[in-house]
Length: 266
Image 1 (cartoon, rainbow, N blue to C red):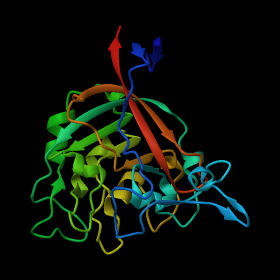
Image 2: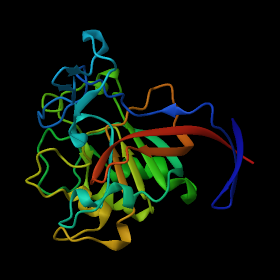
Image 3: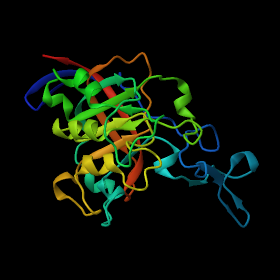
Image 4: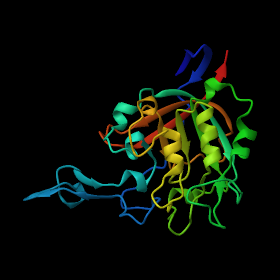
């Protein structure tokens, strides 16, 4: 299905039949990424008396109970409620689903940029210098959403244990730069924009949402972070139309399915 759109003064042609899914399919009871050694996402047939929700075991239909920790089991989108004392729902935070976006690729490096707590000698970070090199000439309209793919980029990301394979993260300078560009939706292929063990400071999260002392900032309450996406190597860096789909969870985070579409500017 081809459509002609006008978004923020940009006239675009989009083929909605050719979307590229950059989420990680969640295989309940199967291989899946994991952070903090939480329990794997599982499913089991519902059983009640004589009823069993599994056709393979004689049940009339498949009827399962699912167990999941969205922040740790796969692709998810989170809102400011992830770090505030006030409970905020992603359903109330994500006000737009069709978003102009830019995809870039970076190679995290061992660099001397600031982080709190201080960087360890083996930490790999996404730096401000890297982002400036990729984004300095991008039309600001296409920075409403920023998708960052990190290298190396193997299929192992779809089932990686991040306790065994520590992930890169954002320096203070790089996240401040992202905020200065006006990015409202940040999508990354790592389990957290912060170091996984950071003494609970969450520097990058707090910079992105401009929060202090875990207090709600109404000005940034509609910004989102999507973590653990997977962007296949054959998808080129560039401008896309993003459809950010989320499960209708009244929670600070929900499993999500971001889909990107090639666009032709008219």
